[in-house]
Image (cartoon, helix red, strand yellow):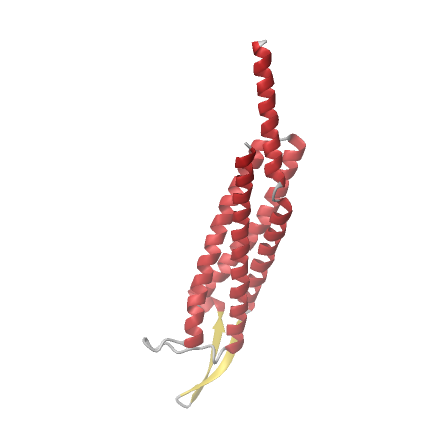
Length: 202
């Protein structure tokens, strides 16, 4: 009789574990996929805009005309912006594949442990990508303000009055990158919501 009770309790415990796993696997999938695709699209477009942005102008100074070119690779902040968005874009694509493979593994083999490990790893990387994008956006914004307004205290001249098209394109790329970082923030929030559901289902 005692052994039957133990076996019954163990069976109920296993059923509860499976129910929690199903709950964890289904609470955020549709929204997560949409937001992750949005992050992929935004970082891809931002990377392309920064990568192709280039403007050449003829500038007159002290009676001398010379050709000047503005390009993303000439500033470390814009290099950081491009590389960060390229990394985040590649990761977003890879994470979609990993999550889909983990979902299929869970459905086919009921492999709850490996699925949880994959989702935890993806959540950690979401947080890393969010921090990377926000830092790149901050660096680009700081340089953009100087390019737009200059700095009279240290005699840095503004350049956006000359390379206006270049600055407009960089502003668009910055905004796309900023919204992409917000989308990664939402991915992290989805993970917290998922953890909340898991906690109250125990």
